[in-house]
Image (cartoon, rainbow, N blue to C red):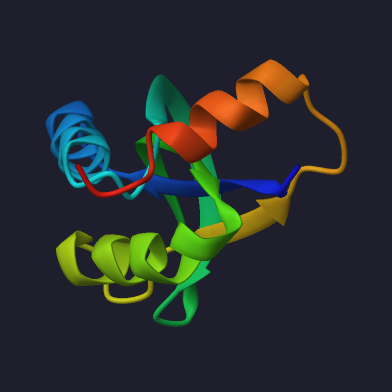
Length: 107
């Protein structure tokens, strides 16, 4: 069975997270997307420490859809330097892995 990946990003508004999620799933770039938050992030930006309330989006996708999903996130993301983390799943329920692959194929 092919491997699946979890792709994660954060945004500054739940509505933005929902739009990113819906577009990725509708476009079959991800089989599902989960929005969680809010959470408080602390980071360096423009030479000073910042704190922001953000929402996390986790996308589940097939290996061969990762690049297209990352490009979608980059193009639609409101941040100048978006956090986009891609993690290969080492082990997963085989039925779930098959479901992810099935739902990331163009219709």
